[in-house]
Length: 459
Image 1 (cartoon, rainbow, N blue to C red):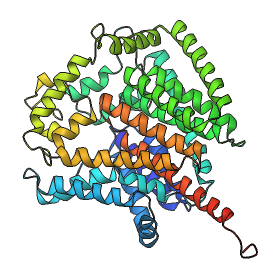
Image 2: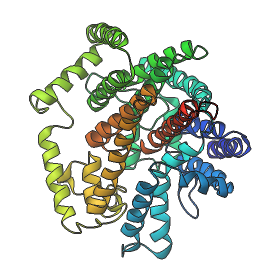
Image 3: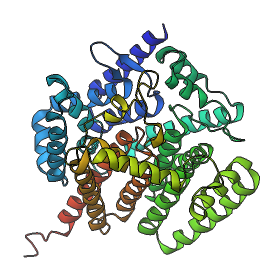
Image 4: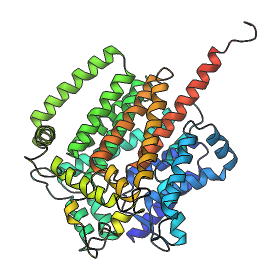
């Protein structure tokens, strides 16, 4: 019965995406679904596994492709067009020459990789038509931030997550290693309880909360009177998730991202005010929440001693993982060992039935994953993507310093987090928002050009 209800919910979101008239409305339903719907929900597993997040992305993509002429026309003017084409070519070449894959999966596997990662930048870009669309999109997103923050606080205070339990008990086989891992997230880690809210892990909750806190800050910084109070609550709600996930990586990534956003997008007065508020808030949190104090102490220890005083990842462990990744990288350095090699061949996707390389202690970095599965092609193409994004936003600071600062901050957040832990399903939200930001900047640039263009009367 539970699975039927979730299928109905999935169909409801799809119908809302298909029936919405405006692009930002379609995108809004997709983003809200990505935030609220647990990633372990499956719409169907016959003939292929279709997680609900993939279902939402496919729904948005197919809807946009329906307007193929406009879609192609917009892509021709897309600032990162050549980069995306290069990335698509790289993804296809990795799969097509992979002897492990059948003919269908030689194309379906890279299609999933393409549509769930970088092509989403263009989907976000295509959804925005007017300069104020980002503000219209912001309202449902900010409300959703507040909802997951409220549930995250409930999750932390009660140390219960009935939503997470409901999904895991209905979609993951009881007694398997993966089941135990997911249910283990409801247990106290040391003397800390990590909140996960509507997400499959505390890491994802912390990352998305930080991402949405950045977005909320940018909306507040834009001077929008209509969303001033809502965006302020969104900042607080987002940062509450950053704290309650109790992840050192999320703490560091968020600090770097906010420093970038404040540096590029605010006046000197705001920089001073924000800095003072952050310091005071940090002191209060450090002195009054013991779990936060421990996490901050552990974060400092990670840089001072390499993490030798605490559990979890350490510099020594990362060095071990790097050596292991390099070993597998040498097996096929050009195009890697292929998609899902870590899950299927190294046994980390089905830990009950495969021989694990336990010496690796996991694959806690996007760099290690790319080295093993995508080789030089994956490393170069992904590097080009982020260089292109950074260059674009730096060039557009004069056009809109608030949005350009937000774009740079999100790139820094994603890179810091994914290099520290791995992407962990954070591609879709990140790329969609980056696409929205790019299009909003492009539209503002066009409007400024029209205003500055001399009229015939002046010539």
